[in-house]
Structures are given as C-alpha cells and as structure tokens.
Image (cartoon, rainbow over all chains, first blue to last red; front, top):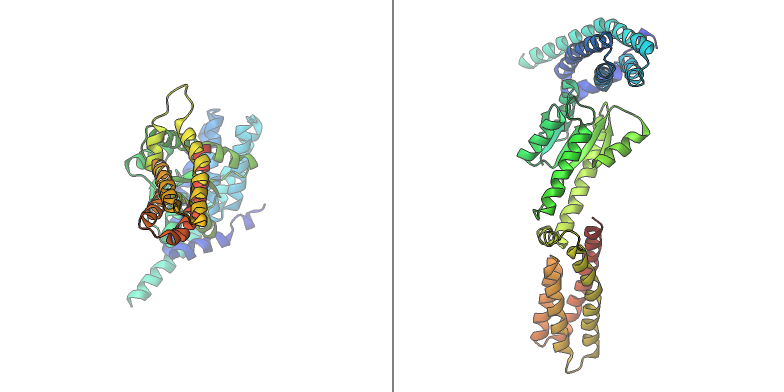
Length: 130
Length: 254
C-alpha cells in the first residue's frame, strides 16, 4: 500500500456524520496523541526485547486506527502484533520500524484534516451565532 | 437501560459513547476489565460492551469473574439478572468468537465498531432480555432460586426432581379435568375442583404463578357449580402448562 491511500476518507466522513466537525476533529487529535504514544511504546518495548509489550501497543493501534481510517497504520500494526506474538525477532524490528514510518508519514495529513475540521466547526458555530 | 463501555483506547471509547448517544443511550465508560467488574458490582448493568484485549484484567477474564459471581449468587438463592455482555474485538481470527462465547460473552462485534452493527447487536440484546423477562413471568425466578438452595453436596439436585415430578404429573391432572368436564356426571364438579387444587399446589411450589392462578379460577368456578364455564379456563391452563414446560426444561438444563 502506498502513502496515497494510507487514509480512508470514508472513515472521517462517518465520524463527521456521527458527531459533527468538531467531534471528528477531536477524534483525529486523539488518534494523533494516543497513537503517537502507542508507537513510542512499541519502539521502546522492541528495544527492550519485550515482545508482549510490542504486541500490546501494536494491538491498541490496530484497534483504534480504523476509526479515523488510518488503514495503512492499521495493517502494519496488525503485522507487528502478529510477528511479536510469533516471536519473530527480525520481523518485529522491521515491522515496528515500518509502523513508526507509516504513522510519521500520516501525521501531517491527519494534522491537515484536523485543522480543516476545526476550521469548519468554528465557521459553523460562528455562522450559527450570526 | 444501563450500558457500560469497557475499552482502554480513549478514541474507541469516545466513538462508542457517541454512537450509543446517537442511538439514544446514555452510557458510562471504564478503562479496563477490573473497573468493569467494579462498576457492575456497584451498579448492576443491563449491557456491557467489553473490549477483549485491555491492559490488566482483559475482557475475557472480566467476563469469567462476572459470570462466576452470578453463578455464586444464584447458588446462594439470590435472584440474579444476568448481564448481557457484548465482546468488541479487533481480531478477525475465526476462533476468537469461540473464545468470547467460552468466557461467557453473549455476542460479538468487530472494531472499528460501525453504527448499523452496533444497533443490530443492541437489538439482539433487547430481544434476549425481553425473552428472559417473559420467562420470569411464566416461572418466578425467586422461587427457583429458593429451590436451588435445597441442594446438598453429593445428593441429586432436588430442583431437577421437582421439575421432573411436576412435568410427569401435571398432564394427568389436566387430563382428569378435561375428562370430568366431558363426562358431565354428578362427580364431575368435585373431580375438576380437586384436580385443579392439586395442580394449583404443585404449580405454585415451582413458581408457575400464571398456571397456579388459572387452576385457582378453575377450582372456584367448579365449586360454584359452573361446570361448562371451566372448559375454556382448562384450555388456557393447558397452553400455560406448555409454556411452563418449555421454561422448566431450560431451567433444568441450566
């Protein structure tokens, strides 16, 4: 999967429909902070040779990523979780690195989406006031 | 309707709460399995949406703890409302469903949770609960819980014996009533009244309240010399007995 379709726009649209622009923007922000923390945990666990820690952090990412449509991160997290559970040392290192890269690549796009959603939310509430 | 969401990812938690809000439910959320057990112990929930993989006590273990407590309460004779537990899982392995059911979960939903799937899984939960409520109206669970208390270690379960005896005897009592009405002779009224009184007693002992009430009606009608009027009530008692039989068979097999 290339970076161009790393993000499924339908998921963000679903969040907007569910709770509006502000809610969708908040969920993207939450994924960036929570997901960033889990990527860091996966990397730290990998360095410490703690495979259960890698599997747990990767699982948390896999389970959350679908909500914002971060499909590539979701796939790579699933892969990292599997190789950590199977105790495939070399694969774990490569998978965690790929996961961290995909998350870092996706970050600016999600930040842009978040900014766009927040601006829309502000405009809507300003429009509602005026 | 009390709904609890047990989910460690703040993102999944907030999305689930928003989805429930959209469907008209105000739910509460906790971050792991032991908090879910605590919250449910403090305030009994109707439905728990349980993430399977959480740090600390995971969803499978939390479910086992909750089910063990329900079983212990039931064994001690307390009436127990079984909470409906829906697993939320990000795993797609086929055996995952088996693991959820083995832990005592009732249903299963995939992550990311989508609104239509959530609505469907809740609809199934409500129809299960409605069926349970209906069963409680046919056979009073408090009476059954009381009979369960009579069990002694190493002895056959008296509840099972009571149920078997009732299921064997009740049809002949109903038959005796119908025969007496059909024969319409000078002994008919007494025969109907005494069969109805006997069935009323054994139905009441097993918590079959509606059946007992119908038998009371048959008995009183017969004692008032109104033999033909007992006929439709006996028919209703037969139907109620069939409902009671279904519920009692379920209680017997646990």
